[in-house]
Image (spheres, helix red, strand yellow):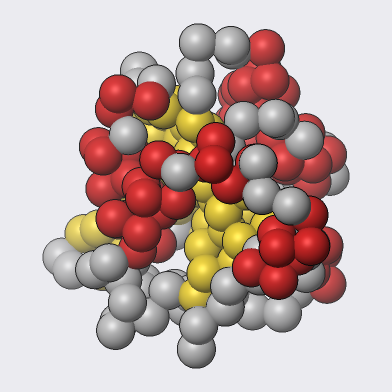
Amino acid sequence: MKIILQGRPGIGKSTILKKIYTLLESKNAKGCIVEEERENGNRVGFRIKYLPEGNSTKLASVNEKLSDVYLSKYSINIGAIENEMIPYMLNMKSESPHGVFIFDEIGRMQQKSEKFIQAVDHIMSISKPVIATIVYDDEIWARKYKNNIENFVITVTEFNRDYIADLIKTMLDYYEKYKAFPQNLKNELIHISTT
């Protein structure tokens, strides 16, 4: 089961992943979450936080030059993406004790690394459940994840964001039953998109 959350920036996708991680503690969840860094109420960067370890690395900054690669005003830490995040993603498949993988995010900053999409394809091939967030806009490179009939795609809005973590927890609780569904029923149910 692959569940992908999309929604406009700041809508609460990462917050939902944090709630899901807390709800799934008994399911050996593992993954990473991108957290904002703020100064005087303004967003000045992002950090990648690894779970359950808790260690984090700066992903992007407006105040520091982290590499020669920029997205808008943000300097992107390509070294952290390629030397830390991608190896972490590639190692997920072999980590058998973990039952659910959480990944934040399939986004523009990470996509600045040519190796990143290959790593995303890798985690999407894991036989265990994956819950990920993805860029909201219609990026060509992101379509294969949003348009894959085997992925549940949920659009996060201000009207549904308070319920999505519990919905996903319920979906994962019934994952074994879902796997036993006939394929034609899966095909009818599989693509969820609320606007």
